[in-house]
Length: 405
Ligand code: HSE
Image 1 (cartoon, rainbow, N blue to C red):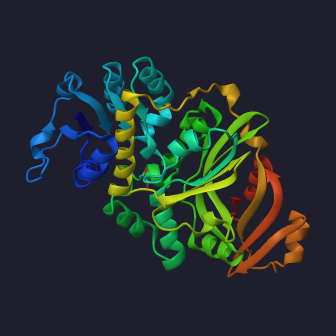
Image 2 (cartoon, rainbow, N blue to C red):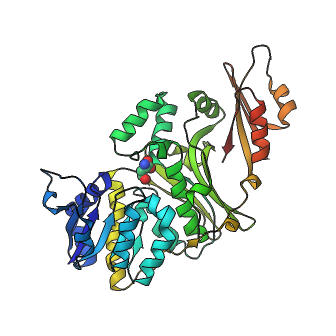
C-alpha cells in the first residue's frame, strides 16, 4: 500500500480525492497495490465531507510521517506551496502538482532536489488541465527537436472569448460564470491578463528547449483590451481571436510570449472553444502534432494529478525518467524586437475621410485583408517587426495591433 497526502482541498484537491476513491479499482489494477489517502492538509474543516476525518492543519504531521511517500500539492500560489514541496522532496517524498506558479518559478530547482533524493517531481496537471502534454513531450517526442509551440493554454479566457464571439456576451458576466464553474484562478486577473498562460508557456518552453525562463521576463498581453468589434472584424476576414502562448527559437535563443492572436479558421486552434485548450507543437521529425482537451476544471485536472501519483509510485519502484531543464540566464532569451509576423490593425475611421482599400494601401503598402464595419476598420498587413507595429498603432486613431498566427 502507498500512502498519499493531499495539500489543499479546493477545486482540484477535492477532485483528486474523488478520482482516487471513485476509480480506486482501475488505479490499483494498474499499480498492483493499494493507494490510500492518509491526510488532507487545509486551513478549513469540511464537516459532512466523506474525507472530513483525514483533514489536518499542521503540515509537519505529513512531513514527519515516514508512511507518506507521495504528496499531491494543489494549494496554488508560490508560498507556502514551494516551501512545502521542497521540504517533502528533501524528506524523500515524491511530489506531484497542478501548481503552475511553482513549476514556472521553481521547477528547475525542485527537479534537481527530487533527483538528488531519488524521488519524483511531476507536474502533468500544470499545463492544459486534463490534456496529456508534459509526458508526451518528454517521452513520445524524445527523438525530436521541438521547433515551435503555439497553444491555447488558459481555459477561463478561452471560455470568455468564445462567449463574446458566439453570444456577444459581456466580459464581466462570462468571467463570473467561469469562476462559478471553478475554472478561474483565485485572483482571476492572472487569467485575463495572460499571467497564467505565461507560466504555462515557460513550462512548455523549458521542456522543449531545456531552459527555464522566468514568466516575469517575457512579453505578456491578456484579453482585457479585446472588444466585440475587434472580434467581429477578425471573423469577417476569416480569423478567430484566441489568447496564444507562443515559443520558438530565434538565432538559437528562446522567445516565449503570450498575446491575443488572429488564427485562420482553417487552423485547428481556431475551432477550440469554451474551456478547452489546444497545443500545437512543431517538431523536426514528426512534423506538427496537436493536443486537445479540457484545460481546466475539477475532475479533468485531478485526472492528470492522479496519473502523476501513479507514475510517482512507479518511479520510486524502478524509475521513470524525470523532465530535465536548468535555469535560463538573460543570454538565453531572444530579443523581442527581432520577432516579426503579419499584423491586424484595428482603428477608427474619422468622420470626414472616405477610407477605401486603395487609400489604406497607400499607407501600409500591400495589404492582405481589409474590412470596414461602422466607423471601425480592420487591416491585415504583411510581416513587420514589433517596433514597426507599435509605431503604426500609435499613429492610428485609437489603433490596436494584433499578431497573426
Ligand atoms: N485558471 C486556469 C485556466 C486553470 O483557466 O486555465 C487551469 O490551469
